[in-house]
Amino acid sequence: NLALYGYEQSVERRLSDGLDKLLPNEADVIIIAGMGGELTRDILDRGLDKIGNAVLILEPHSHVWDVRMWLENHDFEIVQEDMCREDDKYYPAIKAVHVKNGNLSRLTLPELYFGPVLLKMRHPVLEEYLQIEYRKKQYMLEQISKSNTLEAETKRNEVREVFDTICNATFTRQEEAAKLSAVCDSMVVVGGR
Image 1 (cartoon, rainbow, N blue to C red):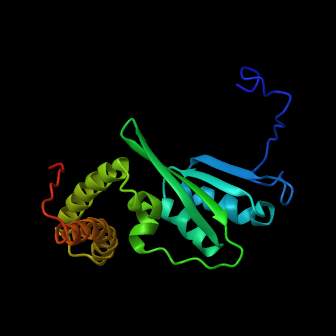
Image 2: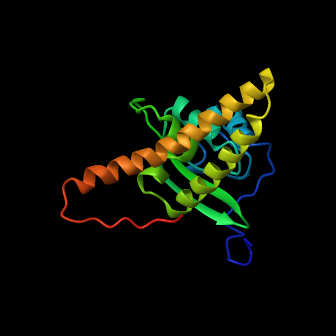
């Protein structure tokens, strides 16, 4: 692809385990995409001394909350997010910048799970994802409730935490609509099932 677009001479390619072959402060932008969130987090951890002030573009396929928590714990602010769906899989993308003074507000649980920017902009793909996740968690709770083991209770609490987070995001949206309806003459709410 580099040759196809005429970039073969202006791009240096390196085979590297994570950021190992990168020099400290060498990159202006670091893109880590196409792998799970735990591996993304581990690459960032191992390469922390290489990142410097580089802008991070991250696209973890799973455990996105791990990546957002890592960013928060290392003074990176999430400044932009996007989300797409392909073949019934959802892919969030995160752009984060380092904040030198460490003056970041802590992410709420819904923001860790679903993204502060995605929630604020009410991203349509996120809303679709939330509806699907809500139904999945509802079904999981129904199935888990049939068992009375300690393991089932632990799993029920884990699922309940995510379930409550999804409900909290919905509740927040409904609360904002109620406030808005109090200051306008008429309001139309359009939604799915």
